[in-house]
Picture 1 (cartoon, rainbow, N blue to C red):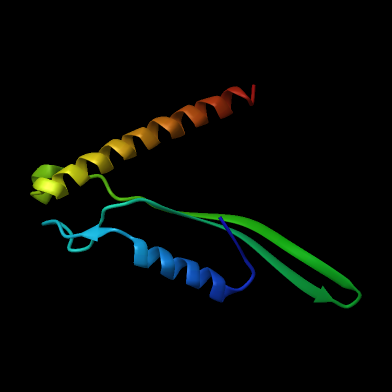
Picture 2: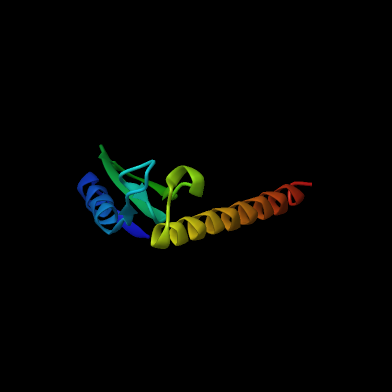
Length: 110
């Protein structure tokens, strides 16, 4: 998580994420994402009006998930196949977590 106050700071963080992103070629995609990434920004903007200062705040979360894969379509072998299996497992786990959080949230509304 990072506090940003200017567009340039957001852009710098996104550039950093792009540089550290893990990609590799499969038969379906030359630049297949092999990792997940979450960007969390806390935005703060102050506006000076006449005799009044206003501060606007927001939390922004950007999520880039590696896509699920079918071995038969990607023709993955070796390390690419292992990565694909791990990607699929992590996406399945994420789905379980989201479903449990949604269920817990809906129970709290009763």
